[in-house]
Image (cartoon, rainbow, N blue to C red):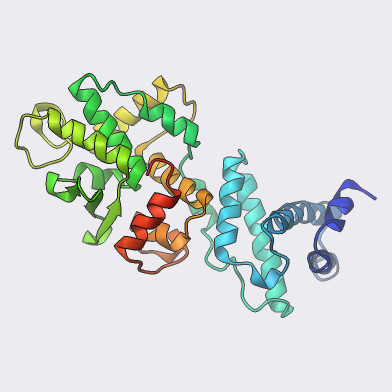
Length: 303
């Protein structure tokens, strides 16, 4: 028995049967080469083993959210974008086959991001890397206090950089630990920030001697620019020894990834990020601010 056959044998019987039927269809109906069929087999075995470790034994029970988690783990394992797109393509072909054969009722890959979107996903930092990044600003200086507050806020809330630079003092409630931000399409949302971010902002505001309305200021007391925030994040990333290219949006993506890895509901993450498109977040719903606060406190590593 080959290694591949051995791995397949350890799968739930229904997985093995579905995979074999699919591979046979590739050979008989589509006349694909042996090498191409073996490539499909390797990619699908990897996915099916993931499902098995997640306790899923029924392909009809596979949900889009589990496929998103799977793709996220591929990225964090260092898989190249081309490899990820190839595996996602194999998943689409496999699940469409199962729907066509009436083995499952619905295709869980139907609204997965396209290869173009997958290619554009930013880097994700580990929790340890985020900690190193946040420790870089010097809290003994006014600029360090500001930079620390900005970095903490980006990671704690998942704000877009445009939302961060547009924030005003009245948009943050330090006592309740809540942030009000205006997202795309002028859509307002409330996001919990967590104690480290709130305390960092409090220290920064205590150090200011001005009455400017904007929360984060740059040179000459003007609102800090998006370009300045990008440069600040990259400078501290280099100082922290982080080799990958890090941007403010990478902090937003890391926020969502770490919440998801911790067990947070995708619907709550969608609300926290302010995503309106089902293609972007896959699941759309409205949840209460109290529930968002509970989810953030339970799953965010710096809540």
